[in-house]
Length: 196
Image (cartoon, rainbow, N blue to C red; front, side, top):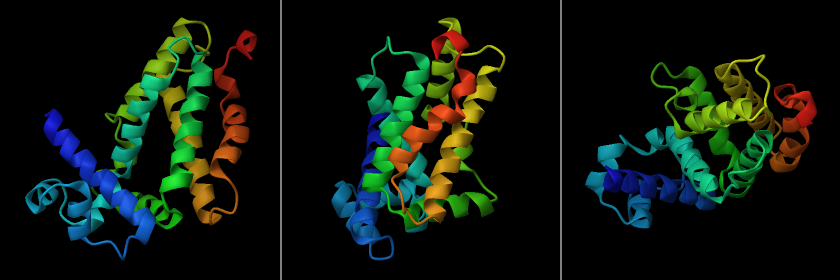
């Protein structure tokens, strides 16, 4: 299981690196296979073709979150953890994901009749957010006026809204800087008054 996950992860990482460096249209499946150090059989085991890689961005995001958990101070305030995760994700997006591809992902999620990867509640992203919200309520740092699921939905909604706006604005401002300014404001209702 771990080996197959690593293979898929290598393909996804290589693909998005190439998409960013040379553009989606100028990247071939053969280049992705070469860059990832995998085989054609492995590629087609996980993906029907290059287009199906668009939905794999959520997988790349989840890998980033898994790495961030290891770097994050376990004693950090739960609200601060949420802002930290947002800032690190937005920095990654700005530095390694092209706006065109991000826009393609969002538009594909709007029209797909199949699985909407960004909304898949079994993703590491959603599990991590739930853990942080539960921890925040237990520590008396986050409100209990909202359920954990309501808070998770609110966080994800705010994050998607900022990414969407950044895409339609053509990246004319820094996503990370704007997120640093706006996410705490959007999420301030999650904090207990004595924690602000």
